Amino acid sequence: MPAGLAAKTARITAKHAWIMPGATPGTAVMELEGTDLGCVRGGRRVFSGVNFTVVSSKPMVLTGANGAGKSSLLRLIAGLIRPAEGAVALTGGDAELSVGEQAHYVGHLDPLKPALTVTENLTFWVRFLNGRAPPGDASAVESGLDAVGLGELGHLPAGYLSAGQRRRLSLARMLAVPRPIWLLDEPTTALDAASQERLGRVMQAHLDGGGIILAATHGPLGLDGAQELRLGPKVAGP
Amino acid sequence: MTAIITALAALFTRDARIAIRIGGGAMIGVLFFLTVVTLVPFAIGPDLALLRRIGPAILWLGALLASLLTLDRLFASDHEDGSLDLILMGRIPMEIVVLTKAVAHWVTTGLPLVVASPILGLFLNLEPVALGSTALTLLVGTPALTFIGVVGAALAVALRRGGLLMPVMVLPMTIPVLIFGVAATNAGVGGTVPFATPFTILCALTLMSAVIGPFAAAATLRHGME
Image 1: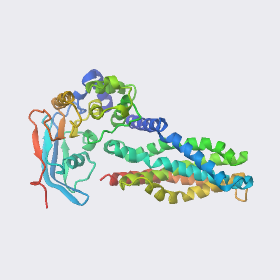
Image 2: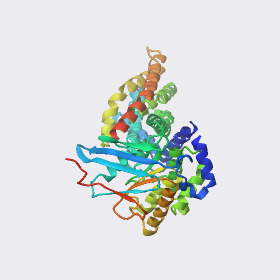
Image 3: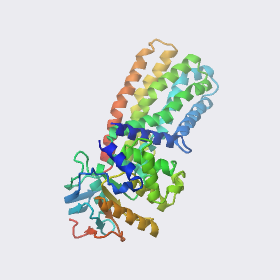
């Protein structure tokens, strides 16, 4: 039973829950592969013929001009939009789950309810995404909030958070709910220098634990050995 | 299995909490119901016999409009802040998610309408039997309004048009519920038709919409998010 196992490992590693990227201990190397991917949005061809391979512990950075299809590619991998052609395949993951079900997707929006407190918001996602029943979820929520420096603000309604704090709360979700694949769309938006550095450390820890990271970005993320996938006119079709 | 129950319980709690906090839908629905029902006697005039005769219909219309008023935000708010993306990516089948959200919506906005209806019925000079039968038919019938409404709420998200599109699409589909709801209420007060006939049809409408609504809404959301 993976849920019980995950609960046990999380209890042991209390504060470092994110280092265990949710994969069962047997799965060493995962490989996320996209072949000949094409995407059409609203009748316009965004990109076509995109190939990539991301393996555990080796991050990939998506770059390209505005409108080159970085966000569309991430949403496509997450399963939120269907590819016009091509396919995304994952080897080494849980065969019974789709790629999206094993992935965290952090998009432009922060999925938070202003009427709920910071803790309530994160608790919801821990319970909904991970199925972790109370009271076992409390430690995951607490360590997630501490890891992004929001531990003091747990009682505050999320409506009072600044843009950067909202983004940090979104990132806390990735730490509180272990998932092997992280799909990040401009994760550093609205983050200050200290938080960006903290995000870099968190991502490095995820990679060291055998996780997969695919991030769309315009600026440097501070990841060692990142391979780059450039989306742009040269891969875009007619 | 327990993971799914935990996840759904969390979803229910979240939606219910948002609804009952300040600015949520629960109080707005009841206040709107109160406003509609209070306005009618002003429009019709102080004809107590007439009010008593059309009272159940007014209560039903008020409840119908009040429950639709709060429904259009059901998926729209989750869509706007990106929550819907994560819910769609999650491991819980969308049909059950829709069903849970619909139940949470009914408990926080439909049930208060049922509770408020006997008090508002007094404004319309209804006799005790009519108050009871209106409350009973609303209790059985308002879930149908919610389950039909979720399809409209999903369409409003999928078509990226909010506001009045939802009621325009949903109100025609609620006509059978309205007909048999009011018919059952009137039959309960007295008349040629036995109470059980329209009442069981009303029950059947609720059960049917509870099955069809979540599937239709889930399919709409899945295809509409593209």
